[in-house]
Image (cartoon, rainbow, N blue to C red; front, side, top):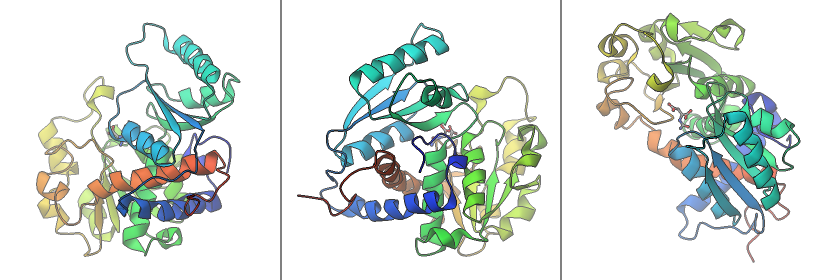
Length: 318
Ligand code: NCD
């Protein structure tokens, strides 16, 4: 494994499988009454969040605490400094505090890369979502969730599986990281979106592209719905919300065309009634809440492996 996790493309197949198998061991902890291990005792993890987050920040915090690391949460939103300056000044502060790992979420694509390669900090940098670019730990938790449902928890089971990712791909760091990681793991990804919500250069991604949701659904082993990211939109990307839902939303009628084993996923936050109806989100096929639980185990595995814990992740209790 490299020192930083900035992009899903940083992970070889062996790296990704190691993270997923470590996460599988750690996942069992979530079902125990005492969820804590001493593996990262004395290490410091900083959560540096320049952009809003619920799930990701809490998940990294829970992951670090369950490994007994010290956690510092730094919500940089509202800083009056320009982004470049504030990133550098903040980085120097973190370095002075002796951070071993920094999880950074930033509105600017490339900010975690800048932090990792600037020489400002010596810690490992984990990308917790940068602009419209990447969100590698989300892709890892998604792959973990798929492997649990589609093949007894083996990462290899994603080989040849068909994953359909639907919606606002243009603004989605989740979609890009998933496309890269799923390709590494041997899955076949189809993106379904209106032409206006596909990024320039999608032709170079290792995916197929379709504009027809109804044609893609019956072949899918997993369907991942994406939120329409209105906060990143400055202009009309589709005629009306109603029209969007009609063509690209997942409702009960469309869900009925899925194969029996097919799961429905969403990284959250969901806009119920827009990209997904409430009956689908709350149905038996939905693994959306489980994705959140799995996220903690996957982030524990990432932190543990990046920080090269010296005791075994599980079983090192005194
Ligand atoms: C996503 C994100 O922030 O990239 N959510 C998440 O991390 N679970 C997706 C989104 O905001 O729609």
